[in-house]
Every structure is written in structure tokens, then in C-alpha cells.
Image (cartoon, rainbow, N blue to C red):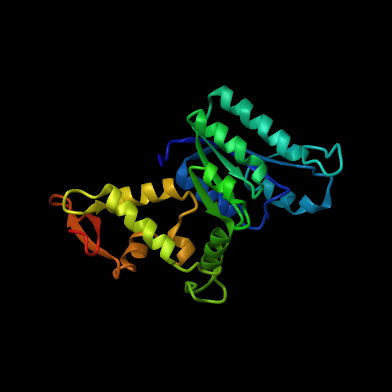
Length: 251
């Protein structure tokens, strides 16, 4: 991800909690510059009233969308139309779609077909089709846990009751990591960790070491020492060290 990417941030107020908006924007800032920030909802409804207090603080433009018909989600339609208008304006390099609604699956696919970077942010209840339609998907629960850590006087341990429930590193994930390492390995079986992380995210857009209690990829991979060999190599005469990984038993 390049830090000079211009991003359009489109938020579905009907399907996203407002409590962690600061953390969401911090995550987006790591990916690029949010040049457009819009949030869609029927602001006459009390269900979205919590958003009103944070919009000015974060310079997010509210877009009013009345619910013309009961049971129909007019907010989705307005957000999709705006996304296509922004796409054709050629003013951005990517989109961040903030929603847990599978109705945006086709939109994410269409934007990617046009060469746009698409990042999704939503709750863990988000349907799989929307998750895999994005280049990267970030869970709000992880962002919320990080915000609690910042507020705490001492860091929150991964096994703390304050922390979001940590997912177990299961056999399927181990197999995925091993196959990814082997896909990128040189003739001696070694693969550069940075490349492994990028390919993992392409295979599973919701892969994030924070889901398993690790702040970054390197400590997460080092925890798998029963399955992987780790080799840290110096870069020239600098203090920079690159990490390479190899599947144990691979010759």
C-alpha cells in the first residue's frame, strides 16, 4: 500500500457503529490520504443520532437519504451511485467501503475491475462474499480493541477480558501459510516475509495478525516455529534486517 494513494471513504451509517470512528480513520490513514469522506443515512431517524456528534470532529460530510419505501435500503443505493460518480471523476486511486452489508459486494467487485484499490471495514458478522470482494478487509472489533489499549494505563494483553476474542490459529490457516511460503520460495525453500504477507492478504483479504493477538506479521509468524524456520538477514552494512521463512521439512 502506498501512503500517497488518494482514497474515497464511504460509510454506511445504517450498518456500522460510530464508537470507533477515530480508530477507523487511523487505519485508513495507514493506507493513503482520505480526500473524500462521506457518510450515508436517514438523519431524521434516531438510530443514527450517535453519528452526529462525531461528524464535525472528523470532517465527514453527511449525505441525507430518506427511506422512501419501508423495507428498502435507500442508503445503499445512494452510496453506490456516489461511488460510481467518484470512480468516473478519476480523482481517487481507491475506495474504503465502511459497512457490514453484503449489498456492497457487487460494488466492490466493480471498483476493482476498474483498477481501484478497495478496502472494506466492517464487523465480524460481515458476509464472506463482501469480504473476499475487497483487496483488504479490516474488522471493527480489532480496531476497537486497539482503541481500548490506547486508553488503558497499561497495555491490554491478548488474553485479557478487555480484549476482543482472539481467533485460534487453526489447521486451515497453518496450511494456507505453508502453501503461501512454498508458492514464493526460492530453490532453497526460503521466502521473503514481506512477500508472504502480501500474498496471504490476496488469498484471504481479512487476514490480519491482530485477529490472533499479534500486533504485526513478524511476531505472528515467529510464533509458528513448530511449522516454520525463521532466518533474519542483514541488508548490506545497515541495521535493517529482512526476515525470511521456510516450511520445516522442506528440502
